[in-house]
Length: 504
Ligand code: HEM
Image 1 (tube, rainbow, N blue to C red):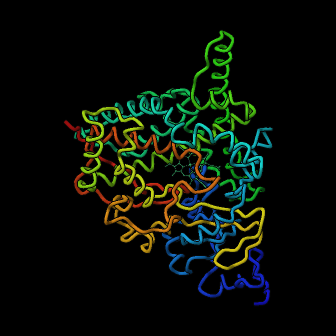
Image 2: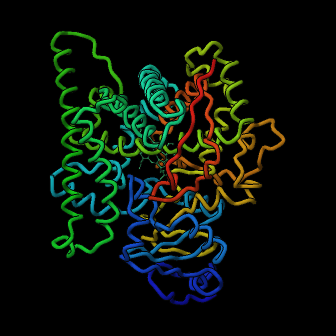
Image 3: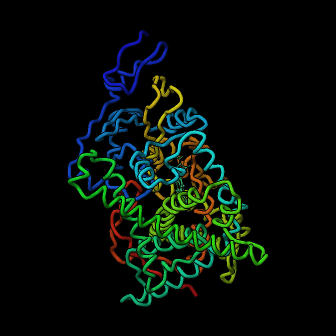
């Protein structure tokens, strides 16, 4: 095969590998999307940190449709993005196996610009290469290992107790003394409180009746920054004088940093006072980061903020979908309840040891994350070397989009993919699916995978097991089924309202 020029700079073919031009001509297509229309902006305006992940920004249905139309690999353009999409487990595996020592998801030039403007450290999302690795290595301990994350069990239980109280309050306040409307927004408060109590070692009061003013400012700064992140990236720089987005983006970051810094500085002073008094310093994640001396104070500010951004919306959306399905499937719910009740009789508080004896609960969460991978599409930008994927040769600086949602809904991996079947994940079950290891990787894989996985799992397991101990969840009569949609993260397209019936 001879080398032929490709019709754009993104792919180039080399001897022995397929001509990348066939990406656009043999049913593997280039999909062009117009830039900047109001409707496009509406559906693609981002909510979360994972704006940096969902590089092709295609909607779920579009990603499934494109897979059917173009096969497992195709190019797409959206605004400034020129992306190679891969939509089989094997191709995802090929990209990941060539990601190198310092994988990059995608560029975040607007975050970098903000940090340059304010003279701040870059942090885990903006830094690349060995610098990213240095920060990531400092963050990994006390987060990634189950044994270490287990130290957060008491504080997570404290926050789950507040969640239970809030559920009871809202239930009793409702007309039928059962229904909680828009469960996801309540679970969002739980997610925010849970992760900040570990990271900042401070209870923010998100689940209180009257949320403190500073906490409200924190929550809205997080929301504003994330909602504006993609918008800012999308519009050309010259529009910044005319459109309000950049100014609001900067303001949101300023507010976010201000509250985070205040929380951290308070802790630094407490630790300093304890040391002065000759007391033993004990704490959680912030104390660990400060005492490990691996990061500058500026890097600690940025790192905790970025961990918070990764942790607030992810666990809450996953828990919402889990409860939604349990409410619709009495058999699955009973089985889960029976497992929890047999491991922890008399509503005993579950410990991490108890969790090791709850395989069905883990299967329920795995199945939720298969059907609703909260990060439905991830990205990898090849930086250091050229790569070969599906026998095509791709040059450096190729942006890949890993279409996780399409893959985990592919029936060749998971028969009847639209059915919620936790049994697929159980070792001895006849329904256990024989799937490719990369067909459902909701936390990512490799050195760049989710740093908060263990904490997220603990939060979800404790919250789910205790909710089940106290309540049976049901749907209201005639409640419509709810489809997911992407707002970068995968979220319910409508509010989820569920009934919470107290158990004896
Ligand atoms: C259900 C819960 C969660 C899911 C499904 C999830 C999923 C993911 C995924 C898919 C990635 C990208 C991995 C990759 O590129 O290979 C990621 C990255 C990340 N997540 Fe999570 N996440 C969850 C919870 C959390 C929590 C609770 C935290 C905070 C403690 C967190 C913090 C982060 C951070 C900081 C990154 C970036 C890591 C890096 O770039 O080195 N996540 N997460």
